[in-house]
Image (cartoon, rainbow, N blue to C red; front, side, top):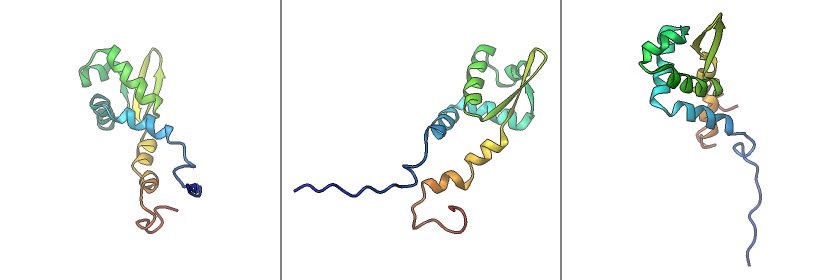
Length: 116
């Protein structure tokens, strides 16, 4: 006779992974990684200068910037008619922090205060 397994709520079941999906989809593109790298190197950059730095038409650049903005990986500041972009360091650091790695770490492997 078939007996259902007991239901256990895990950490993963209680989390909303859609925020991570958006961020990692944004990161899963070579051009967007290049844009993020250039913003890391240059600091705050006007979109007009970013076109020349990454070597793509403004329409394509705007497409990639929108995806990065929606994922909260970059920040836009408008000054007059120009938009300036910079890396959202706090969000990038949060993604690279133990917070995410602890979600996927086996309970036997969790050490120290990483996964509190």
